[in-house]
Length: 619
Picture 1: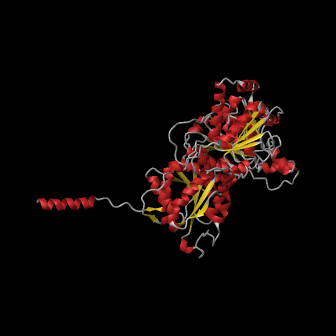
Picture 2: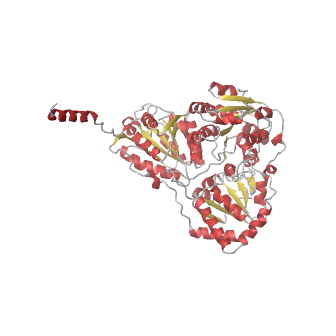
Picture 3: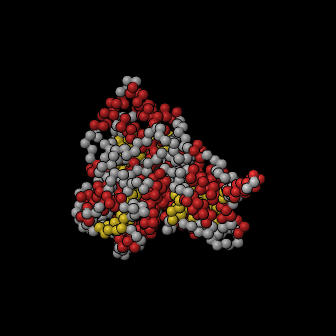
């Protein structure tokens, strides 16, 4: 071959080997690229025609090891899963639904996250823009069934993306609003043709690492006022709410430095070990007399409520023992602070930063030779030496009862004893959460399972250092079945720990189909169904109020058989001995869910006096 022919051949070969140009990025791919940048592993949802471009982009991402889709069985379940994922990982939970009924099905789960300050990115689809107003299939725009209008009232940002050039700016605004206090869901509605639109750029324009980091600023003047109040306080009580997650280590250090008694709201209980020497129980719904006594003590001159709103359950029905002039309210949410006009002082800011500064100040004071803090701490901690958490319980004898059917109190005791310290418990709305708040207390839980300190590796953008705690519950807007999807999202976010969902038979009949997701994803979730053949809280509420018994009875149901039909392992528990025989270690290691159908004594009245008092109007 001549030199000229060889050159022609090489040129032709080079043309054949030349890689095709990179295809333009669709808007759906751009969205997924941002999720990858935030190190989000999963999007929870149900597909449909209008949202197909997003699922195509997720399929491409999944093949390269990026974001993967988890198929829920109902869109509300998808929102609950995203909620559970966000609580466990500290990242933004992402859920999606197609237009029309797919979007309306999401609303209850989104509303739950909104009222419990859980950051979610909610993506819904719409038909193509040119078809608006022409009644296309499942139209849910302002000219159809307006889902954008419906979601307006349970999101912190809510917008229709009507042009590809709007997308990045609206996404950035949404993400910033999701993690800004008060945190919560944000929503973007995406027409299918906008989703399919191509961008000339091949990568995201924004670097989310700096854009989504939370502020650590502290109001120095407010901090000085708080330090002065603490220097004058003799007896302090600290009330820990669910918003203390990332700061719990610093708050417990503060309590130790001051000798303050520690109590928790129902949704903050999981942030503190029941074995902590300063812990005096839960204040609020299903709470403990010891917590009420700690607040009512006349010697207490400062009550510090941290990271909590003052709704019915968290404030024990707006109790005067909490809501008085001794109260100092600390939160990163202005809305929460508006609930306490009677407080002597309000401080808004990032809770972790505030308590890091308080702890440093107290160490500085002690190093300077002022031992007044230390003397007060010694006096207060003398009362903690012989603290036994079982003394908090309303019926400690029932905690160890051998009665058949099994008492809910005994069930909670066994769950706390049998499962390992790393277990995450999620308690569902109804009797389940009442029993868990009062009686569930793991025996070997470490005092501060995870202390938050400085340093460490760089965090994913939009991720706050957070700790959902060993028990999770929801307040205020409290849908039945939340814990079922929430447990699946928790297990997906952290497959290394056992997850126990404590739910009722009524809740399981609403949302129990989601156990099929745990089967498909091989997630180690243990579903504990309290089977009393009733909507228990309704039944007992009617009885205590002297109302008619109506609409609360359920037929006998074999939940173990239902679970097996969906591919899960299952056991029927009729007596305490059946629990003891279970191989819990194997259950926790199993790649797939297990259901315990527990036949509980339905005549045991749950600790729900706060709810009954409010319903009766005796505030």
